[in-house]
Length: 279
Image (cartoon, rainbow, N blue to C red; front, side, top):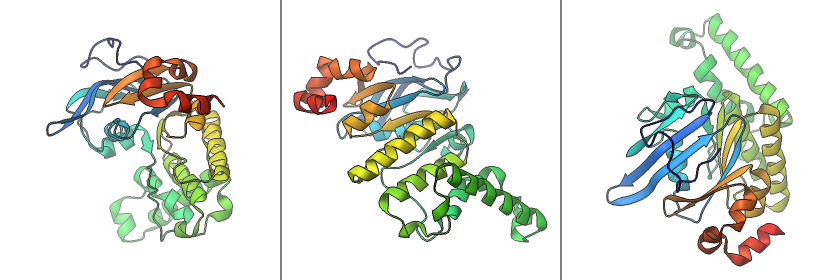
C-alpha cells in the first residue's frame, strides 16, 4: 500500500525490502544545492497495485519518478525492487531489475518504425553478443528475428500491429503515446511508471488511453504508478493515491479518502476542483 509520510515507516529510512513489495522507497530525500525537492518520501507498492501520484506543479512528482528509475540519486534514503536494494545504482540497473517508465514529453525515435521502437528495449535483454552483431553472424540474424517477433506480439496484444511499419513521427499523438507504453512493456517490467499519459490529448484520445492503461493493468497484472493532472482520470484509474505538496506526502489513501481530506482540498484540489472530480 502507499504510505502516508505523516506516519513513521517501519524500519525508518535505512530499513527496507518489505516482504512481498514490488517496489519500496524509504525516507527518500533529494536536495539540489540548498533547494529541498523531496523530503521523507515513503512508498510500499504491492504486486499488481495501481497507485496514482498527484500534486500541483513543483510538488516533487518528477523528482520521485527520476529517483525511482535511477535517473538521479537520492540525497538520503533507499529504494528496493522485489527486496533488492537499488539506491545509488545507475538507471540501467533499475531497468534490468524490472522498472520501466514513460515520459510526459513522448520520447519515441521519430525516424524509426513503430516495430523498431518496440524492439529497442528487447535488444538489452535478448540481443546477440558484440562479435555476432558486428559481423552479422547467423546468431545475430536469428536474435533479430526473435526480437522482431516478440515486439510484434506486444503490438498485437495492444492492438497496434496495423501500424507496425509506420514511422513513429507520422502517427497521431494518441497513437504515439500508446506505442510508448508498448515499448515500455516490451521489456517485461514488473513495475511501470507512467508520467502524465493523457497530457496533450483530446477527450477521445484520453478515453482510449484510459482504456489501454486499465487493460494493461488487468491483463498484465503489473504494478503501476501514474502521475496525472486529469483528476477524473486518476480518480477512476487508481486503487490508491498519494498527494505531494512542496516535496512532501500530504495525504495517502483511497481516492474517496483523499478527496475528503481537508488538507488536500485546501492545498490542491480546492472546492471547485473537488466538485469536478465528483462529477
